[in-house]
Amino acid sequence: MEDLSFFTFGASISAGIAATCLAIAVFNLLELLHLEKEMKMETKQLPLFIKLFMPFVSNAIPLVKHPMFDQTRKSTEEMILMAGYDQAITSNEFIAVRILSGIVGFLIMIAFFTAGNALSGMLMVMVMLIYPGIWLKNTIKKRHLEILKALPNVLDLLTLSVEAGKDFLTSLRDILLRRRMDALGEELGRTLHEIQLGKQRQVALRELTTRVRQSDLTSVINAIIQADELGVSIGQLLRIQGDQLRNKRFSRAEKLANEAPVKILFPVIVFIFPAVIVILMAPIIMQALKTLAK
Image (tube, rainbow, N blue to C red):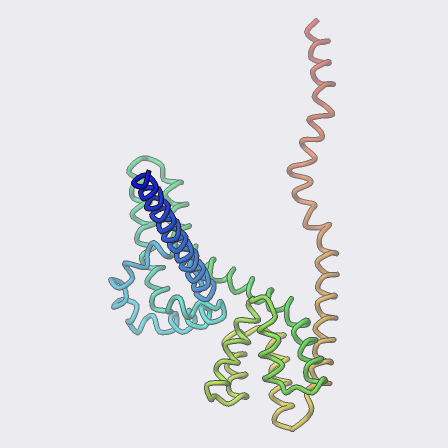
């Protein structure tokens, strides 16, 4: 009986140790997953199409550095900055991806030509050539639209904070800590970080406008810089800018609502009307055919 009790006690201790080790392993795994998720949120993820070519871009970099690509490199760098992907990919790497994508597209086109399917080959090479540029332009467009939507609310919060007695940078920091991270939050947070590292506020704000190049944000930042240079209180200025942007957003919404009937006309004519006509006329046509057959 004593041996049995000893073995039972030992088995219980072993089971407890095993359960504890398992719990620790699970908690460590969850912590690693949480840290990985936070890192992914901080680093923008490139689309899979571009990721496939990233391991091979070093082979095309010497070609991209040729002077003939200077203008393309400059415009691509500006677009990457506007899209917010300057930390994920450089202009040389993006141009290299476009070159490699075009080469692969031509190889696929040759393969389709050999198989006797020239049309599919031409479509494939067109997709491979234009997709990176289209993706970058669409990313910039979505980012600018996101900034346009968020800017009036941020200005309202800044106005309330400044009028309550806080300075501009403290108000901006508190707002960014309490907002869901979006395109505007990323750019303002980057600017705030640069100012905290010692860069002059006016210089950091001008670099923000150069980096984003969104017209509404540029006008607001220029007004803030001008008020800072003249020593004017920015509380009233922020309120005026917020009201103007809100009215502009309402006008844009009304414009889109007025354009909706025109935009919906084409799908109605092409897809809905033929289906309705078929549903209404099919029984009549079938009955007429049966009558004629008799």
